[in-house]
Image (cartoon, rainbow, N blue to C red):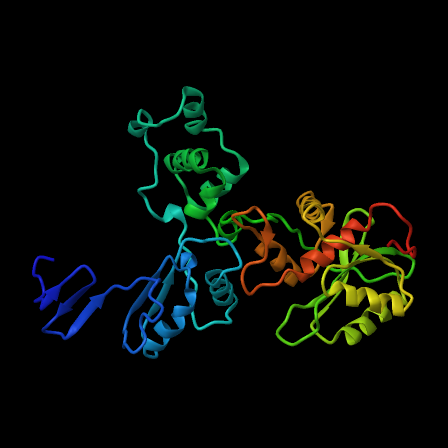
Length: 362
């Protein structure tokens, strides 16, 4: 500033303006009590999706008076975290926040002009592909809808060559792809269709991922798939009611439709298998082990990706797309998220392998 304001002090963490009795200060996301007890008239939370302790936003938001701005800004970091939940809620209008999406091409600096080509760390073949004026359909849409120049397209090609799948996270173009491509998602494509009605003459595949049946715990899930190509999810029961009540609902369906049923037998699954036996329901007991779990997940992922299986429940699509690989390459649901629908569908999908309906497999 040409005319600098009077300062009482200036440090790495804060600046105090004595004449206006106001100040800026910086805290880190690692400080568990940051913001508590303060009054903050303008707050900016940067790269919120990467915070290891996002719960501290509770203290910060209470420190910001009503009608004062609180900005949550971040690069996407996959689905299933608090930033993603906040964004989806704001986008749907179920939040106090207003969503603002900023695509990479809003910044004119992201262009690759002729004078920069000599500095590209790429071979001649790659350079020729980058600067080609033959545009694919995706590039044509960007040019048409956002008036991108050829230099912006060249820059985009260069960054995609350099970053591969990480491009949509670091330089997003829309608020869907940036969440799908970031992180290490297990399921990248889940196509939705309208749910068809159940039919008496069909033979369905069924899967049950059982839980304890207590409030606040995991859900039971019973999923049904019509295997006729293209296969599609046609029905589900999802709740955390007591096991006997859940099974009464399941029996009502099984008594009316032909279902080749699989039930996970691990842990609490033993109680669910016992309920099926007491009711003389035919089923196959599915054992989730270190070798069978990857098969279940990988084959379910392939079926959705190749559109051999189509989804009809939005909640299930969210669970599928939320699932991530951890640092041990194990597919898991994010913290405080469910995977009951995923495994119920996975077990049902495995039931297509051999055997006839209404025969018990033990």
